Length: 370
Image 1 (tube, rainbow, N blue to C red):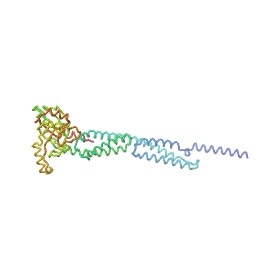
Image 2: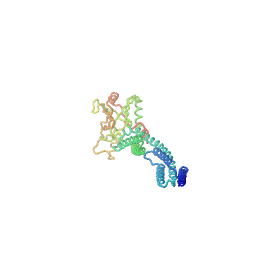
Image 3: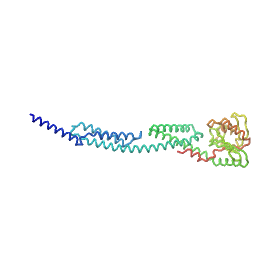
Image 4: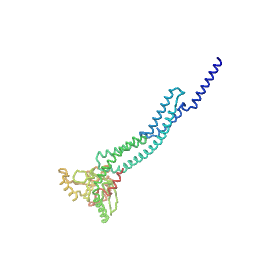
């Protein structure tokens, strides 16, 4: 009996040693925990490297492989421990690890590309808004166009905030909306400017003639540039004063009749000086001149003049300006201080030339680039 017990103990010991050796030296049955943990760490890093809101196919594949590796490990653990085989779980974990590394690389590449792209677009839109802002505010646009410009600027500001929060996809969509509105507005404004500048050669001739006459005669002359919102006082052919000015709301339209709120263009003279005026001080010009009268007659024949509307008169250079908008009935408005200064420097019969623009069309089109 004793011998049997000893023999049984020896057999048990040998069996235990055999099982231990099997578990130690047979890789198939060894736990894949190390490989799976390694794959998990790599997958976590891959997730961190991605751009929020952008899909990465490699990351999706790495996650599926990792989940499959874990499931395979769990299922294999349900089998008798001596016959378990964790090779498949290890293989899946290794594949997940390798593809996660690829996802990290592609994620960083995508992040760099998106960062460069969005940074460039933000810069482009910001510059476009900055360069066009004063011009857009100056032009007689429709309410819808003004609203679109304001909305475009708001969307750009929201895009910058989204970018600071690293919400790349949201930023991208906001930039797209902002750029779409701005692009459409710029197309409309360019068309309006091209149409308006069809008279530029005439404006340039009138401006050059006025300056030349001032230089030859030594007299003072007033030159008004509507696009620049500037009134220049020349003496002996040189600019001696520059004043900011405001016009009628429809200043880009041709002045045809009373009440159209358009500011005339052409060659005029100061017909009278008013020391007392509704608008502080005033210099009345001889509108309508013969050219204005001819334009009125032609427009009447084309039925472009509203019923019983006269050609109008009483176009002045006057004070009460500085409102930051075009608001007059067609006159040229200066601030009271500027009007006081101009008033004392000119006399009746001083020539006044009003042009659409001294600068060429491209000068303003360059402010409307995207």
